[in-house]
Amino acid sequence: MDRPITHRFDMSSLLDAMLVLHSIDTGSKLERYRSQFTMQLGTHPCQDVVMPPVVRPYRGVAADKRRRERREKLLDACLDVVAESGVAAVTVDGICARAGLSKRYFYESFGDRDAILVSALDGVIDNVGDALGDEVHRHGSTADRVGHTAAVLVRALTADPRASLLYTAASANPALDARRRQMVDRFTPVLMREVLDADPANPRAEAATVLMVAGTTELLDRWFRGDLNFTEAEFVDTLTALGVALATAF
Image 1 (cartoon, rainbow, N blue to C red):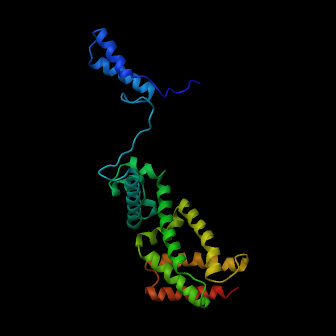
Image 2 (cartoon, one colour):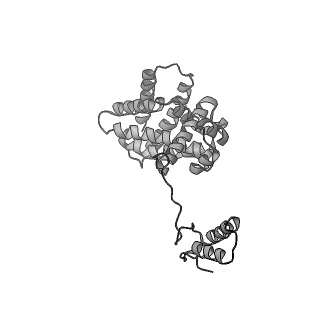
Image 3 (cartoon, rainbow, N blue to C red):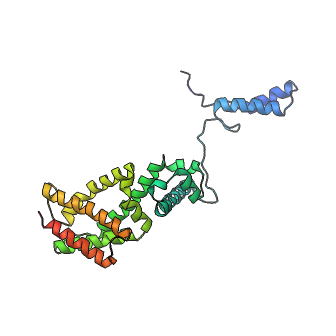
């Protein structure tokens, strides 16, 4: 296999000299010859070595920052569509139209509609995890810890109703449902240790904690849809009472 050419002499000067000697028109023919050499060597006419493309700032904004901003704009648009029409209505075209970006920029960050839905759900889960991680401590009674956890969870999900709708509707999409199951697996041992003060190796404690997480998700869905007539404080109290009952079952 031929080795790639990475160095060359000044080909443009050589072409100019040849054209002068042979009285060849220096218009389109010259440009065509230069283009052929440039394509073959992978360089620009002013270069002597192969160089990677340079991505420069646009209007003072670095390329990486612009990509992050476009990604966040697409995620925000995805949550808007979920809130307005549900998970099933999410399409690449719809998200791009909502974000005011072309599909080229969508595929710059996401492989398909499932990928952006999962990324949006990851953002919701990370926010909940950050809130719980900052405020859940192993002190006080079990009832105090369960109540504190319930309050933090409800507050984190109600901060952005769009996010709560995506979280509770995850079962409607296989990719989202799989990611939410991973979330349950991720948080179950943490809740067992930090909230319930239980041994993660205890199968009864694990079963009770999974039931607590799954049941809370279902209750959140019903509460967000207005099927449960609770104020936020009443809802937190209800989750706390149910959580304590499960915690004492083992």
